[in-house]
Image 1: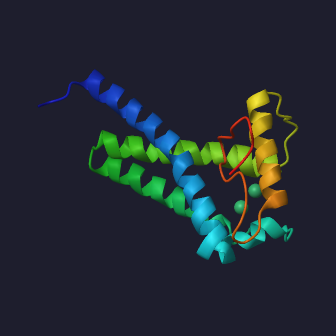
Image 2: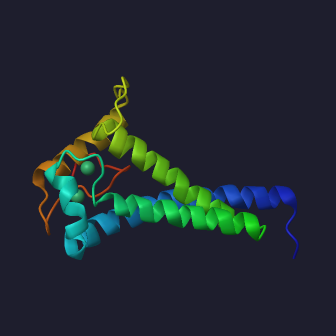
Length: 153
Ligand SMILES: [Zn+2]
Ligand SMILES: [Zn+2]
């Protein structure tokens, strides 16, 4: 079956949205079970505020940046809309993660922007609690762009 162009475009958008939503689950899982688990040696400096420009913890972000780059490049080279859509989804989540977590919360890039929306404030509050209450193998609020009304896990 040959998909026509508009159907393929719609499918690509749906794939991108599904990937963005799934990435929060992937990030949550990785944060809870790997970063606060056997990968703690890489995540530890994020919880200790070394004051350095770069952290070992940045390898996680780099991994997903390379993954999205690989999908985008392979999508372009092989004319695959779906690979391109997956790559754009991973990249979009990464941009959201970087803005909310690294810029708004940790101020790694200084801006005058002050979050006003209640949802964004809730997400930032949840991450503040994560930093207060988490240790190598225990913790709360492992999500990055999603936070439930009652902050937990
Ligand atoms: Zn953590
Ligand atoms: Zn953090």
